[in-house]
Length: 308
Image (tube, rainbow, N blue to C red; front, side, top):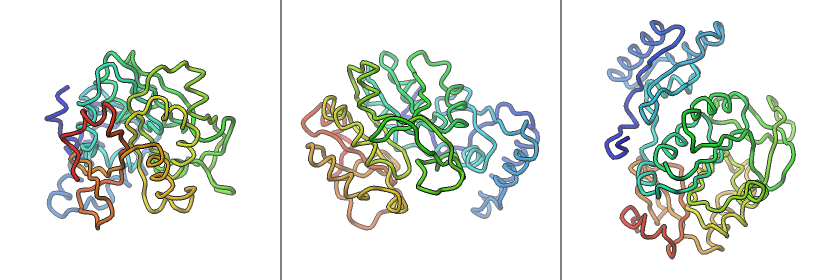
């Protein structure tokens, strides 16, 4: 795949579904309205409602981020990808700079969009995908089944090992470790990254992606030995709304990395790393942060995409 020319904001082709005429018509209508009015007038919601009423329609086979077949649910989020693209252009510069034998850990792999790109790149390496949401995990496993260099794990990550309550209400991309008394929670297995890495006899970690909806601090605490030993590039998401369920907020995450000699940066949609992060954010910035070691191989690999 030519990552350099990929357009991750291009609408996604529907290749197969049990209601392809309906889904294709809804896609065309949504694209027409968006082009002419900037709005989709609730069309993804209509598609999701039909999928709830007729479950056999809740499966779309589309062109994946690597152009291979990819499964999306016909939810508002899934159909939003169909009409708006995968929206992951910020990952492109990292993917093309990963060594071919890199080991990637994707915590919060969701349906496997980023994992696909990692797997396509690290042909001599390996990608470990953690996804505790049962529905997401089933789709993730199918989406990654063609890759021999991928292992999918139906596990959550934190600073303890055992069982926990996990919220699966709302959008599939917003599932998270449940707060006390939170409705819509199910029981899932959870592990410390350090414990899993020891058990799996992990010898190398080059890139760590964490997308866990406010549970980042716990994941880092549970993986601190792994991070200190291998010093991977770490990409994590953080939004202000995570403050209510995050221990210490964004400041705690920054402190974790700074105390270990990492440099922190914020990512824009073109994949540029900005070291200045406190000014008002331009519209093309993301909520993704990247921690990297300026004294390690990261500095060489990332030198042309770091902006002071």
